[in-house]
Structures are given as structure tokens and as C-alpha cells.
Length: 376
Image (cartoon, rainbow, N blue to C red):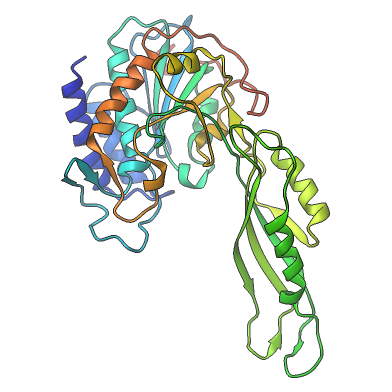
């Protein structure tokens, strides 16, 4: 493979993607761009919603399947941008633009990796999937596509990790809490102030510590991030609502945490979802062992990705830095994309794998094994 050509093609495609707004649930234009781009290369793209995917051309049913995945959606630009978020620009080795780091760089590097492996007689099949709604863990993203794919033996999740392998990541559970009081006139001693009643509840979330600490992921982290109460300055508020961001480690399932929190926090708690549990890949998996051979440093990631929705072993790794994600004047070093293509290929070329269960604290199960119509 010509790494120089792959690198320049990656930069060109990333610039085109940056120029197309692709907020979660609004990825149509970016999906159209990729679908047409792949069709021009005669790669027979398939589409479900705003998810675009490709199958390797040397497919054989007897081979294990490796999924190469990253996402096309972005958050909305934050305040503080001094550049145009949708105008890609290069300066001093940096490519600026919304989604350049999270996760456009991973997307284009994984596509070039797919193209390189597609030319070789590998012992694995490959699927490249550019998915939607990752930033909101939406139902119309990767979760809607996986049931339609053949059984997958291994996944690569492209997210900004500075090309170090995230062998585990924390889960996510968003809780809505309600503290109820009784309204009354603020000038008189009447009513029950829901704000005052909420103080010990908020303090419970601030100070609560779960005893099981992970060597990779640390402690369970709970953060109260939103509070809403009161309508008028002279009315004692009868209700306070708040939101808690919960990041579990591998020792606690979301359902287990929800039960304990509901029983102990002192107010009504509703979980928006319990499906995004902590996940990992076994330390003796051939891909992890290959990463170690290449001198990469495994770590536990505090941030969530679509890895949480995969029912098979998967590794999160990609160019860029997590600290640049969702920030003003987002950028990726162009050299990081070149490095990523090289490392991805060295990780996957000639890799010997088999089908197996994911780690005990990940999700379990398999995908459908039927091939799409054009591959039967």
C-alpha cells in the first residue's frame, strides 16, 4: 500500500466531511457524501438510515469477521470558536474543523486501513462501518445496524485515544431525580421548600463512594450536572428536579447501581437507560497482545463510546486526543492520521483470531450470522 497516497486521500476526505454539518440525528448530508464517495470507488456501499457500511471484496464465510467502526456525527459547536467550524483549514501541521478530532480522523484512517487490507489475502473478513448518532447513543446508530451484520469476532472502535489501546471503558447512566415539597408564600412560614429538602440529597450524590475500585477505571463517578426548581421569587418551590451523570466501572452493572441509589439517596430516581454498561476486552486477546508487541500502552478510558453497544470483543483506539473533543477550535495533527493508518494496519495485518465471548463485564451474545443479499 502507498501510505503517502492513503494519507493524502484521508486528508481530502476529512476536509470534505468537516465542510458538511453532521449533528446527531442530522447526518443525512454526511451519509450521502460517504455513500457517493464509496460508490465512485465501486465499493458497493450499503446503507441503513444514516449508517454506511462496506464488506471486504475477498469475503469468505469461513473467515472470522473484524468490524472497523467510527462515527460521522458531531456535537454542536461550543461557544468560543475563533474559526469557522465547517471551514477546514490547515495551519502548522494541524487540521481545524468540527469533528476533525472526534472522530473524523479515526473514520478516514480506518477507511484507508480497510482499503489496504481489502487488497491482501487475509485470514479475516472486514466490515467498515461509518455510523450515526454515536454522540447521543441513539437507537438509529450502530445499535440499529449490528443485528443485520454477520457474526462479528472483533471490533475496532475509532475514537481519539492518541493511538493507545483503551482496553476498558466506563459505562454511562443518566439519572433524573425529583425532590417534592409543598408550595406556600415566601413571606410566611408555610410550605415545604423542595430546594432545602434537596440539599442532603445533592450532598449524598457528591459524597457517596462505592467500595469497589478498578485498577484500570478507578472508582464509580457520580456528578450532579443540572438542577431546576422554582417559578416565582415569592413562592416556596414544591418540586426540584436534577440530573446525575453516573460513570460505572466494571464491578457494577447499571441496574445494580440504580437499585442501590434508589434505595439510599432519599428521593425519587428515574434512569433514562441502563443499557450502557462498562465494557472491556480480555488482556490476553490476540489484538491486545499485538498492541503490546508494538509498544502501545493499554489503559482504561473514562469516556463512553459505541463500544458499549458491541456484544463481542472490541478495542477503542484512534488518532487525536480526547481532550480536544467537544472543544472550541477542534483540531487534529495531520501527522496523527498518517501514524494511525500505519498502526491500524500493523495491528490487524495477519492477525489470528477466533470467535469468543466478550469480557464478563461487557455485553454478551452474538449477532445474526446471515450475510446480506449481495454477499450470499
